[in-house]
Image (cartoon, rainbow, N blue to C red):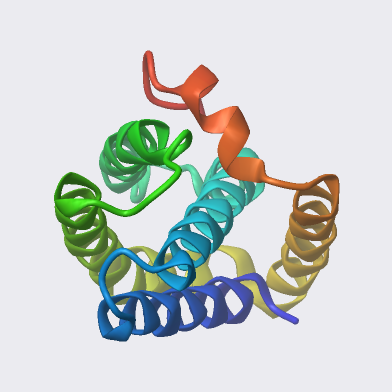
Length: 162
């Protein structure tokens, strides 16, 4: 699948999980499980963007947008790092999840409206297919290794280099 389609599908999946989180009863194990699942998906998603997609799309037309994107990733990673060791969802965790969703929505809107159309023109269909395969493979490896969110606290000092 092409890289942009793959990333967009992940965006929608994470949206669904945030909806499920908001609809779940407060303080339940289901909410904690959804928090962990969202954090894992966001961690793995950020990794494949930072290691594969962003470097492949970096040029003069995207440089500023990519610099902003990795700063947005850093902000979300710092929230994930705060949530990693939770044993229950309290009011503070609820607030952090709300802020994380808002930041994710802003980030996704910019990617889908600005970065992705430029990347599609820059890379072309064949290269997007190659990148999509690479990203699917890496994402699968990260998820299979288990709990990608647990690596995030080691990634909160500075934005990713692309």
